[in-house]
Image (cartoon, rainbow, N blue to C red):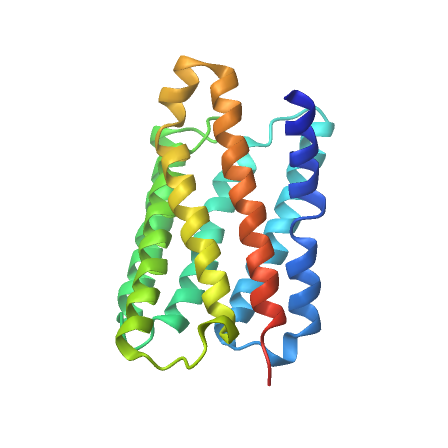
Length: 214
């Protein structure tokens, strides 16, 4: 199991974001505004993962990076859903939620969970909100019925990955302290599930980018 976890971590860091990154850059001229924000997340996620591994190799904790990664990731995804939920959810509501989330993240880092402590509260709340956005987009799509073939719509693939990743990760993050108190090995298995969902998400992002056409 430790060997499998190490292999999964290496794949997630160095190879999982590579497919959506290459697909996004290749199809860049066909990407709409929302998908370009998503490509920015892929690039930021790749750089953060590499930086986190380098910090560990140098003998330091990479947890402080997570206190930066989570609010920036949330902002980037808020911009994605600001585009895709336009006309269904007021864009000012999404931006207000993003600002409040960043403020909460700062307060959490300063007073609740220090930068040397895993920011599980912020990650859980962020995953929950983004999962709600993903559900709202499906509701918008079902209401409008303006997509002739769902399998040809790039964001259908991406949003499906978002549903799986954010909803699954929400339970991992919210229960992380309870799971860790029970068993370290159980915690490792929980994060193995989260990492697997992230890899699936990256693959579906790659499919979505590839299906983007002029």
